[in-house]
Length: 266
Image (cartoon, rainbow, N blue to C red):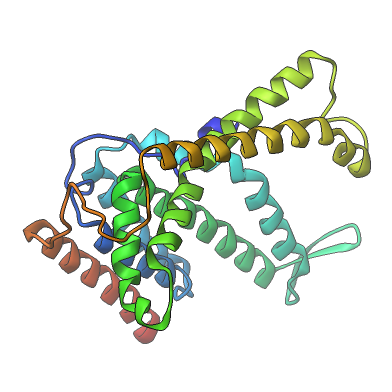
């Protein structure tokens, strides 16, 4: 299950989306997230789906890989769906024992589940199409204006990128430890909630030990390469806006205008 997590993974292929300026991709991703929370009618999600399909198509990332990224969060999506389904007051359309399913609850549950799925698929495209180095450079460039107020732009960008980069690694490590513990007789699935929580101890202890070991190895490797932060640091690729970036701006502007226009006038 954990190997299907796409956030933090990079899919190295040649495409127009991969070649976009990382700063632009960060801003577009932020605007995409904002538009998801502006939508108040189901048909408007068709605009989001069309925009997302266009991005996936132009990125040359396999559609199957993007969809499989939803598998690790299916439980979260289901829990969110049922909480909104049974906890939203309104016109009762069906009773399930002591629980009432309302028309408003059904609509809200569908909204939240669809929003979560589009959110995960959309944000995963950022890391799938951007290498960790370019992502660090993009975040640092966007945060540079805040250096005047004492914000450590480079250090913050580096921490965020390393955190994203090691999500798939930690998930893979978790999967290996879980399989090893199961081979030794560990049971992670049976029993009540408290018993399941206790059964995770043999999983969490080696995972934390492995994480600290990786962090120590990374720190030693950076020191061995004389890494001293962002001061006087050179870059192999200079960030610059080109014609493809301007085209992406136009497409994004049309998408945002469509979502905002439908929100206001429909």
